[in-house]
Length: 132
Image (cartoon, rainbow, N blue to C red; front, side, top):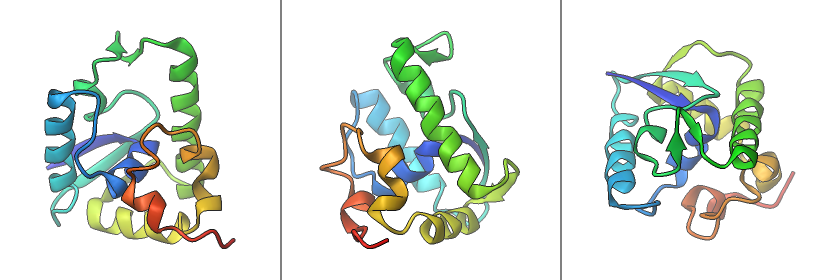
């Protein structure tokens, strides 16, 4: 199985627990979250709309309909891509191990996750320490 995922969605998946924009979005996110945990899943990382965005009610013409929000999302993606150092395809299990190593404090994700509307529900963010 191959998934195409935005950079920042790698962090979202780490903290996902069933919240989303609507029922279709949550169902899709749940399926993708399950797939990313399988040993044979390959992930291609991008800074544009992906398999998660496909069910987002705010997606219009392959972008977030709010232009300011779209630009912010792309910046978040690029921050993750920069930290990964590569846009190659990854085995999902290995990629998420790498995500855990790189993004291991609240400070390491503050520019990416700091303004997220789901931050209070995000298990990934909540478990991170405040240490540098």
